[in-house]
Length: 250
Image (cartoon, rainbow, N blue to C red; front, side, top):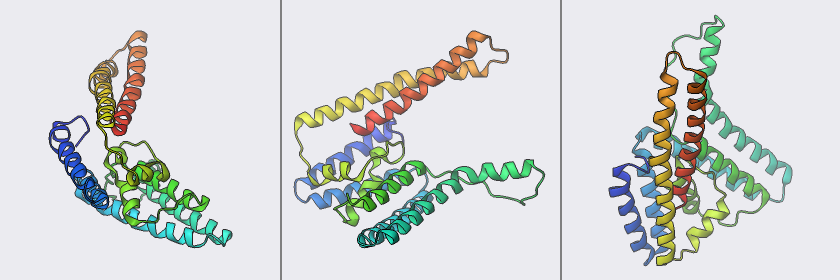
C-alpha cells in the first residue's frame, strides 16, 4: 500500500483520518490508539509476518528504555544498558540486510555454508530500527518525559514515517500527539504539503525512472546515454525521497 496508490488515497487515508478526528474530539487517547491500530494494519498489509518482527522490536526496545530510565542515577550501568540495546538493534538490522550478502561472499570464497533459505527484508526495518535507537539514546540523555507505552508504540508505528522515513525524534512527535490542535488552516496546509509530495513522486520521480531504466537497458550506450541515465537516476532518487517525505509530513 504505497502513499500514491488508490487503495491508500481513496480507502485507507480517509478512514484513518475520519475516525481519528471523530475520536480525537471525544477521547484523545482513543484517537492515539486508533492511529496505532491503523498504522499496524498499514504495515501488515505488505506482509503480515512483518508485524511479528516489528512488535517484538517495539517490546524489546520499550523494556530496555525502562531499564535505562530506571538507572538514571547509575551512569555506568545506564551506559551499559544503552549499549546493549543499541547493539541488539544493529545486530537485527545487519542480520536482515547483510546476512545474505555475507553468505554469498563466503560461498564465492569456496566455503560451503550449506543450503540457506532466502531472507525477506522486512519493510522499513532501517527506519524503525534507527528510530528506536534514537529513542534509547534520548532516554539516556534524559530528554524523555513521557513513558506511556501507547505514546511509544504510536511514535514507532505512525504510518506516515514507518516505511519511508524520515527518522524522527520522540519529543518532536509526541508533543504533536499530546497537544493536538485541529484547524481548517492546518488541514489545508497538510493537504497542500501532501499534494506537493504526490506530484514529486508520481509526475517527476516516476517519469525520471522511465528515462533511467531506458538508458540502463541499452546494450551499447554512448557516453551521453550513460550520463543521462546517471543524472536521471540521481534526480529520481532525490524526488522519490523528497516526495515521500513531503507526503509523510503532510
